[in-house]
Length: 289
Image 1: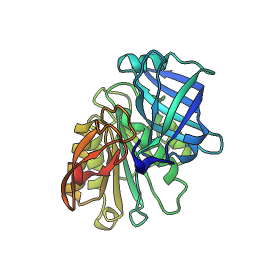
Image 2 (image 1 turned 30 degrees about the vertical axis):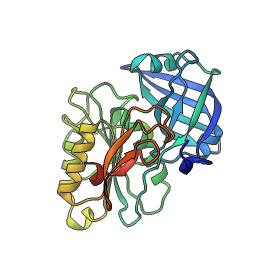
Image 3 (image 1 turned 180 degrees about the vertical axis):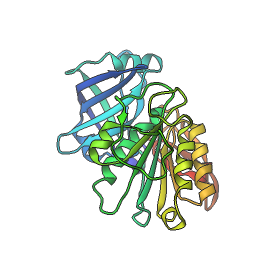
Image 4 (image 1 turned 90 degrees about the vertical axis):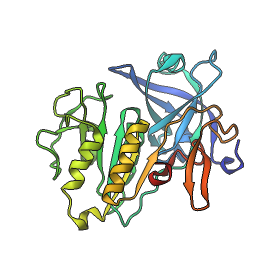
C-alpha cells in the first residue's frame, strides 16, 4: 500500500443489507461497512471481493454513504464474471471491502452553481456529491445524467422548474427530487421525458442560457466514459469554467502499489504519470484532457 494512503483506507468484512436489481443488469448494493462509511467522500471508491473463487477485487464508485447508520451504497452494471458473481449475493452475505480509496471532488464555495454531469456507471459519484452539496449553505447543484440503457431508477417528470432546459426535457431522478436537487436526464434511446442527445449537449444548452455573472459561479464535476469526460472538458474550456473529472481505469491493487492504473497528467513541473487509484480518481480536467 502507498505510504500516502496508510491510515485512511480500511479493510472490513461487510454485510449485505440489500441488493436491488434494475434493467440492463444494473444493481444497487447496500453494505454495512461502518469504517468505510465514516470516511467516504464524493469521488472515492471501494475495492470489493466479488467471490472467494475470484482473486482479483473490483473497484466500484460509492454512490451514497451514511456514517451514522454505517452503510455504503454502490451502483454497478454487470460486466464480466466478477460482477456477475457480486450480483448473486443476497442480504446477510459477507463481502470483503477495502476503502474508501482515492482523492475526492473538491467544490469551491466561490462557484456555488455546481453542474454535476454523470454518464452510465459514472452516475454514482454525482449522486454522492449532490447529497453533500445540498446541505452546504449557498450551493445550487444541478445534476445531469445520461444513459443509453434504462436508468437504474424509476424516472418521473420533475416538479422542479429549471431555467434554460430544452422544452420537453422533464425526466428526473426521484431521489434527487426528494432532496430538493434539480436533475434532468439525457438519452439517445428515446426514453420518455429525456433530452434526445448526449448529456454533454444538454449541459451545453443550459450553460448557453446563463449570463456572464451566472457563468462566473459555475464549476463542473463529471464522471463517466472517457469520451464523455473528454467532451465535458472541451465544454468547460469553451465556457472558461473550472472542471473536475473522475477517471475510470482498470486496477489491480487499487492502493498505489502496483502502478497499473497510471495515466499521463500535465503538472506545473511537466508531464507526469499519475495513479488513478490514489493520485485520483478525481483530476483537474485540463490536466488530463
